[in-house]
Length: 138
Image 1 (cartoon, rainbow, N blue to C red):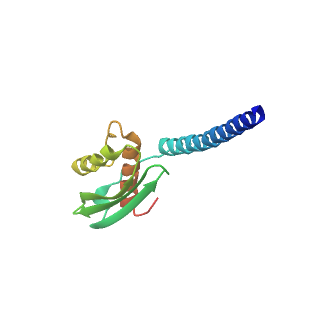
Image 2 (image 1 turned 30 degrees about the vertical axis):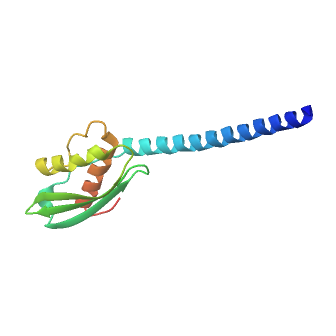
């Protein structure tokens, strides 16, 4: 009788240890992904573009740093950004960063402050706008 209980207890411990190890590996991979994404954002350089040199038209730009991705359409008319349409914005908690497009239109510059609490998404959106205006994708 004790042998059956002991075998059951040992089996339970082994299963528990396997679950803990698997969860640890998954969590470690997630932390590595987050670290890589944070480095990518930190190393992103957003350069302003002389909008007056851009011909009228619609330009698509996208930028991807794994966890955050943005695809935008920038409409230029008479040397001014008339609209920025967010075609896709995959983010963690950065939905509020989408308001940055209004700041870009108002100032006619990509060099605007990030949205507080959504700095990484702000950077990715600004870079997507830059790439659209520069006429290339990521």
